[in-house]
Image 1 (cartoon, helix red, strand yellow):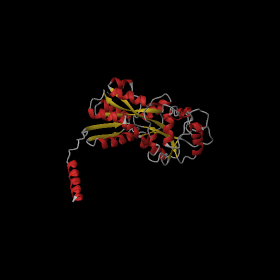
Image 2 (tube, one colour):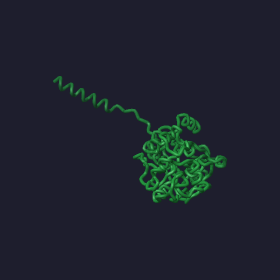
Image 3 (cartoon, rainbow, N blue to C red):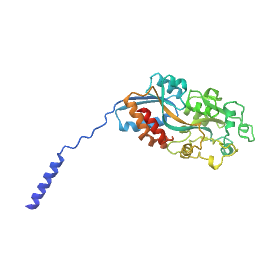
Length: 317
């Protein structure tokens, strides 16, 4: 009898406590639309950020399109998008028109050649001197691989550049103290297009943002192309301290530590027309600068320093 009573009493307690009203947890009902366009360099990172942000705020719609930094800044200033993706410094005239940039990550532009280049081994061991790059893309003085790299032979060099107004070309030109319009070569649209052009041409040479030279999953260089090391100390060979291109992670570490020159390493920006006022955009920017930074390295980019993040967050307030 006592055992039966105890069982009934326990059942009563279970039913009693299960009916106690649980505290209501406030749910974030953030809604709205965020539109972005612009730099190919920032596009893959922005896609990842958008995916992760929507996991937290599923009622937010994010529209994304690439098309080059020039398109991003133009679309932002014309209020066609909330955020322009820009992979270069913002020009003074753009700032005067209302461009309001906020740094969100870093990456770099690297020279690329075909993996089937007949001189591949020697090119990778010697690397590209800055002066050689200048005479390939700026003066046009070097027409063969022998001229550019001080080796024997008469194999011609096919030079490629970007046809669209973009940050990659602007930053690559800045490495030689020039502007995009000073770059020589066959013009190709977009980062994917330029990488494909070099991949199809055994004696081609071009440049790409690192996200289009490496596979973000395997961290290895993409099949068909090779990153051409930069001979930073100008001694005609790639020393161990300059040899950090084997994987995306190695290159990212080198950029973060300042071993890779800047330019062509650079900050990437979201740009608005004036200080952002739209609540959902402000929330997205704050998230990108905080929780969003944990997705940066794995996506092939470089996180901002804590000091830079703090400074940018203060600007949004």
